[in-house]
Length: 344
Image 1: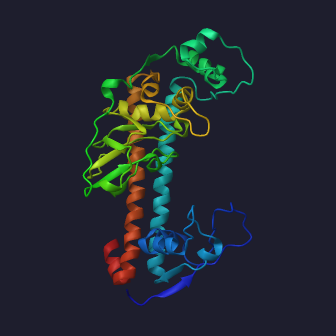
Image 2 (image 1 turned 180 degrees about the vertical axis):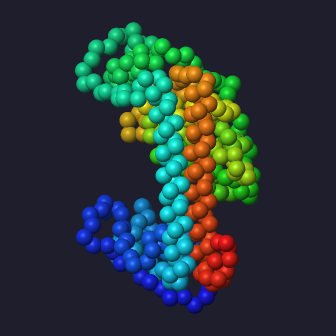
Image 3 (image 1 turned 90 degrees about the vertical axis):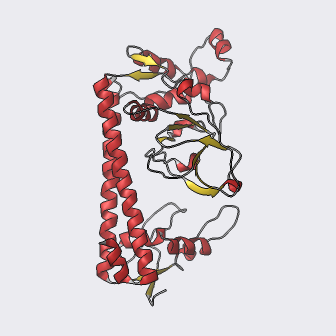
């Protein structure tokens, strides 16, 4: 490692934050600091300084011990500017996706609809017997209200069994797999990531073979919106948790389904069949029974285009993150000049 100057982090004062967050105020460019902490050198320090208890954590005193390598102002400013570009791409991605969802809700006339929670209401035994459920939550009036509102549209159970991915895979113990589980879905954005693990280290529910391009729907706490499209650019042996319902669709219906299912229309329908309280779940049949309102073909195509643009902006943001992280690692390992050549 080259000879470097180091700077110790100090806690910010005078700002109120959640007790589980260490807020850092530094004279260093915040973008540079962000990228360094995401490099292997930053993350290794965080792991080393953390307390390996039942729930691994850091306190503010431990955060103060992190050492940050100092480079020239020019290099750190360049890294900081890359971080600004990354934030712009993330913002663009979110803005474009919101446009897609707004277009869908406006088309079906439910842009302002919010499901209400009724404290008292009357149900019928025949409905309870048919559903084989006696919990009041399943018969909330908001579900009937939603069905009435979407009834004028062409409703279809497009998430059919013939579109569902059910192919399982035999795991080779020493083979490296890209594993997608519930925690790999960003519930805020629908972005799908993965962790690489050897076959022998995968959990029992790592079963379903995927190739990229599938839409995946979490059956665990479904109203969180852990619904996304697996990127096709992953050149890995992909395997998915059986805690997902997975379907194969082409564009534009694939992107349209993501928007519908992540909207209040989809989440409300996913909520109704949920079983359990602290850890609600649904099953494949519940997912296949979701009613999808099909709007005009040109609107579906426009929504798909917006979602694809949103995904592209997020991929650009992720690429900037990886580029800046690697540049900082090269600066530490080989020197600043090598890092600058990498950035050109």
